[in-house]
Image (tube, rainbow, N blue to C red; front, side, top):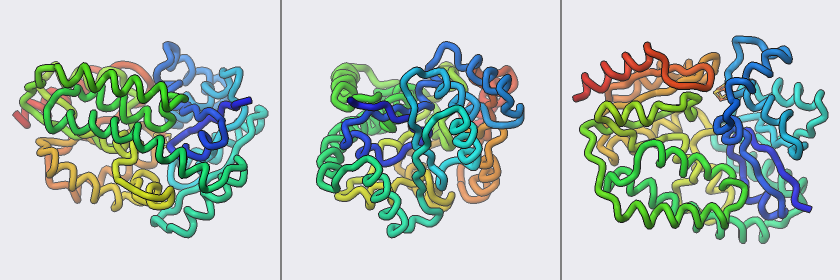
Length: 326
Ligand code: SF4
């Protein structure tokens, strides 16, 4: 019987599908839950410190609250410095963790070894995995069309762009069904009149824990037409092998690999400014200083802590930033 496998970040999902199992991105379950705030609090009651990122606490409670996820893939290199402790606290609760690691510097040999170990664990062959890759690439190509329609024809909102890209981590647990949803969306979008906001923004950093950022920005006559990490989840480059695909995927590697991609998209999408989202208590906040140094474009750093709407201070900062760009 197909088993649900929890993911805390994007991994070679082809392997799970090839095994006939169901990948479940726990981030998406957590953030779309009506009780996401409560999930964070539950982790705090269990003993998670206040000064640990809200995503980690949300993931911990999400896994424990689910009745049917007993295995989680733990990305020990290339995602989050808190993963080790998260997995250890889950193991204590009886959840099995399956280790997987990217390398710091896009080392293809190391990645190959990790992919092979994961294939061994799930008992799948290279041929089976490549067959799934071909099928997933068709879905990805449709999602890339949504992304293109966002910035070339202005027919997709920032939130829609975010949602369709971010869901490529697990394809909403059923890639055929997800493809139908994507194709139906593409049909409706083509009939739309273009959006006409004056300011074109890029969003870089981990996906936001804040609910209303995209809507708020659009009310202020601006639109996010580039979602950096979310786009990476959709594997935006054409590739023939799993190794090539996950080497080109920028998120798990050092910040300079991401910078190259961001700079290219700033030009290509004709952006006026960048929002760099940082999560409270996340090690990636430190990278803000590199983005400020390296990106030649107005940049607003926006910090989020717990699930919920933008606070008044963040709203005011966004207002001033967008006014300045206008
Ligand atoms: S936001 Fe940062 S600290 Fe939180 S889960 Fe993501 S990488 Fe880890």
